[in-house]
Length: 194
Image 1 (cartoon, helix red, strand yellow):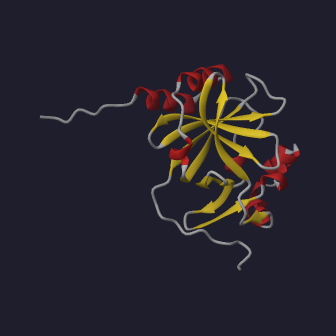
Image 2 (cartoon, one colour; image 1 turned 60 degrees about the vertical axis):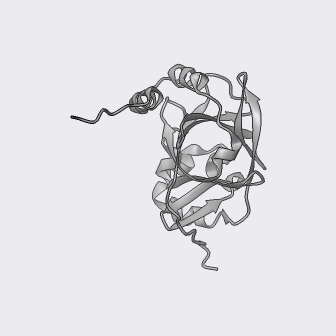
Image 3 (cartoon, helix red, strand yellow; image 1 turned 45 degrees about the horizontal axis):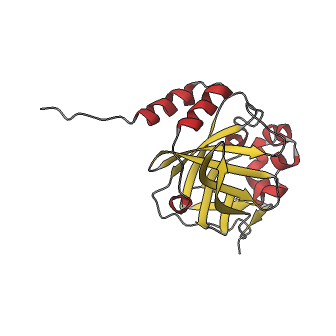
């Protein structure tokens, strides 16, 4: 007797979108997903862009972005960089992509991790709330110093689809990304050596 593998249709659709997606396809998938409770966002999450032709596609990965860390509703680290066992948080208000220069960060990717370490912070730079977006109340990360909300929808228990809602951006100009829950108890390193 062979075991039957059940594949979640949402996970299958996300896998197809990771290979190739238009902004309209990504938004339609986002709109079909159920809300994500803020309480279930706690912990460390590994991030990856969902490439739709947005100017930020591939930028975070090129500069060593690892993901996000949610320590509590008032303590969110939106930009975590580094490798397992040696991560650090960056202040998004100081990062080149926040300054409207994604090309600068992309062209300097080989120097990015050491340079980003200089922008590191131990302080959280975002909050986690339940907000309504596109008619659904769901977990949302609100940046402290930038006009950006990252809105999350559940793909499965360990995967969410994120949509960056930046002031001035409207459909189809959203940046999409995925977060996958990290299961390891990794140690965070301070790049400043203290």
